[in-house]
Image (cartoon, rainbow, N blue to C red):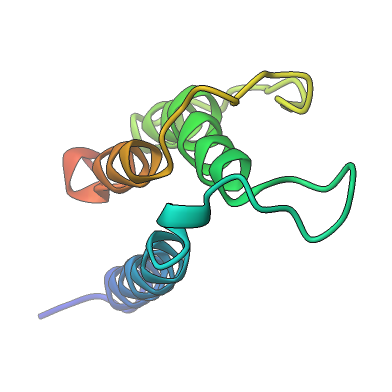
Length: 109
């Protein structure tokens, strides 16, 4: 018998995976023009993909692991807006983001 919180968790994880797949597909379709920007000063597709991968790896994954392990940690704010993602390939960022977000790696109690 599955408990309601496990059903909710599984539904949320499935929704995260589905939204990630859609966003990866959309960004991958722009990979040949990964440096295009909608306006001066706005982020390029390359920067968006790199930001997603970096934030997932450096912030979200670690926080999820600590919470899933039963800790009740305090976290400082996180941002990576000052980073230079100019040499990071969009496709590589999407692969890293997908790998890092594989929540099957996280052990839930």
